[in-house]
Amino acid sequence: MQTRRATMRDVIEMQHCNLRCLPENYNMRYFLYHYVSWPQMLNVVEDAHGHVVGYVLAKMDDEDEPGKTPHGHITSLAVLRTHRKLGIAANTMKATMRETDAVHKGEYVSLHVRRTNEAALHLYQESLKFRCAEVDKGYYVDNEDAFHMKHFFRPKGDERMHYVNAEGKLEKCGREGTGPNIGGGMGAKTLWRTATHDDPVAPASAVGSKSSKRSAPGRR
Ligand SMILES: CC(C)(COP(=O)(O)OP(=O)(O)OC[C@H]1O[C@@H](n2cnc3c(N)ncnc32)[C@H](O)[C@@H]1OP(=O)(O)O)[C@@H](O)C(=O)NCCC(=O)NCCS
Image 1 (cartoon, rainbow, N blue to C red):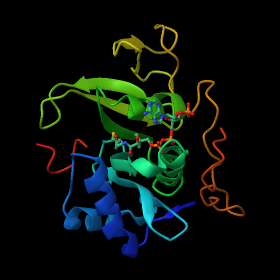
Image 2 (cartoon, rainbow, N blue to C red; image 1 turned 90 degrees about the horizontal axis):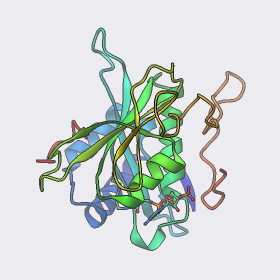
Image 3 (cartoon, rainbow, N blue to C red; image 1 turned 180 degrees about the vertical axis):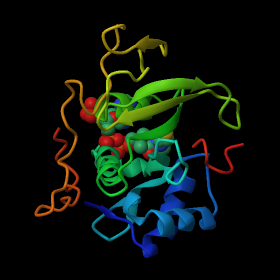
């Protein structure tokens, strides 16, 4: 299996994967809007037969807004049930985060996750070092709360972030709090190499070596 940038031909299979895995679904126009606007931020994993078994659909927010901080936003992430716990989500997310940093110069990546989605919360907090910025009450159509999470590439230390503990409660991060620090810096190990002129961003590694929405339409 291989993690790679999505192509136009993958978009239909990405949508199928989304429909099979998540209640938050999007029309084809919305997938294409992402693909045409930020092609570097869409990544897939394909199986031996070339079928998409996992994807990340992401976009840039606030990139043309004066005074606002450009940042990436993960619109959707899913891995087919048959291919879970193989490092696919972590690898595709790292590929998208790397491109957000290197290509789009985003300061951070954000996303929303359901309060009860333990698998995704583990992936974001423990594997990818996201931390919770706030709780968006009743964010989803069924009124479930969302944790609004962020991963800063080069944290300055003044970000007010929280760690969601095993009871689902928020603990302050950093010196003031008890929760672990935020990712990207502040002692956390770097999740990827940054590209240089002579060494362009390496393609995402093959799956198996685990080295290591706010704007989403249709959510209501
Ligand atoms: C969440 C999801 C994307 C994870 O995909 P995956 O490919 O199985 O995840 P990975 O194999 O990369 O695992 C990453 C980490 O999460 C952990 N993890 C994966 N599934 C888990 C589960 N069910 N419970 C607890 N931890 C889990 C892994 O053990 C791994 O931890 P580690 O880095 O400490 O070893 C997948 O379960 C999925 O598609 N769920 C339905 C869609 C969804 O919830 N998307 C996210 C919406 S915000």
